[in-house]
Amino acid sequence: QVQLVGSGGGLVQPGASLRLSCVASGRIFNIYSMGWYRLAPGKQRELVATITNAGSTTYADSVKGRFTISRDNAKNTVYLQMNSLKPEEPAVYYCNAIAYYGQVPANYWGQGTQVTVSS
Image 1 (cartoon, helix red, strand yellow):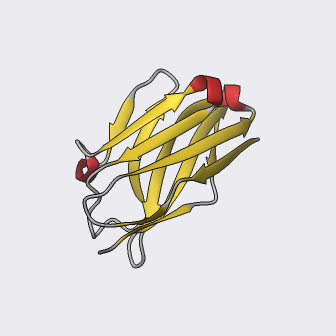
Image 2 (cartoon, helix red, strand yellow):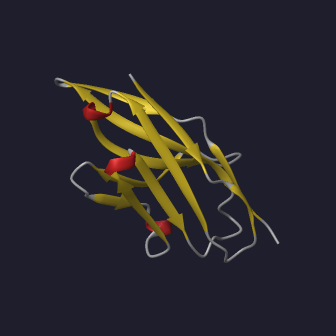
Image 3 (tube, one colour):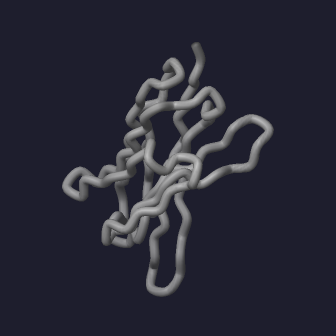
């Protein structure tokens, strides 16, 4: 099992920055990738960014150039630096980890952290 604890959300004005953190614990050596998804009211869950244990990253087109995902392996932590936040981006941001047990994948989720963008 893998446990994820996300944090760092808050209320910011448009154009401001936030950094989300996600700490993994448990069977972390089985983790293949970690990332962030977001869920806004009335919308489907959206992938924001992911990073593999090799350091490969993916981003949603809407956040490219503004958001950066990184990881600190020594701290078992993944960060999402969000710059130039837009008014349409408030959502609950969920940390995600994909782990493999042999050939069997498993999906894990953190508890979510609220990001509000409002003037």
